[in-house]
Length: 300
Image (tube, rainbow, N blue to C red):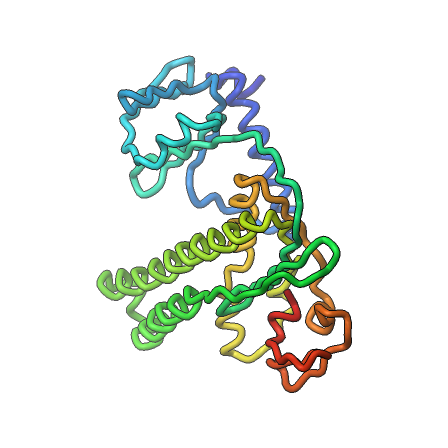
């Protein structure tokens, strides 16, 4: 009732309550730490906006049943979602850096493919290793897809840290130094995002070719359990394994491919041909048939 008296529509009140519950849930998960809202964001149901695709305009309902009109900067890739089997649901409107950003949220009914193979996937710092077996355990193929994004992102991260160290008292206040540091940070982030999209697309295309069930490792609380060297921890801080898994998951769902997660404990000690492997060193493993493979192959 309080929100309604302030001029909010009924659907606005529902979204505000839902968002408040999400914030409370996150606060409880973080042991009561104070929540910080970094940007103003509103989620709107289809009743609270009107989209004109031809004119590329968006009308949004605001307080007291008034409407405002926005002229959109349109991207051509959006057109395929309006002519395909996708359905436009809610939208997200954000205000950041004196600009208004609109995010369209679509949904699509997916029919899962009939499973013919199983694809085990091992995500590493510099590659993704996969092994495809039949439903009865017969090995069909295996491969490695290089992941160079982490190395390139780490280069930008090191440059930014060196600048901060060199100008320890100035970099926050001198605009030129601050902008240069920010530039390398943005390049590191964008490099990782692009690399994650590329490698997840490649792995899903392979799974689509074999009609495979994709099996990923459940890497829960990996960072909190890590206790490595300084170099290892620096790589781990940039390792976007969750982002890669998320991209693989939604790209696979679009193609009708099922995805599941397994406990990774002990997976690098089990041979794919059923015998106990012989570890030559940390990296290389010898199988019963005298083949020498990497530990990543065993894990996948």
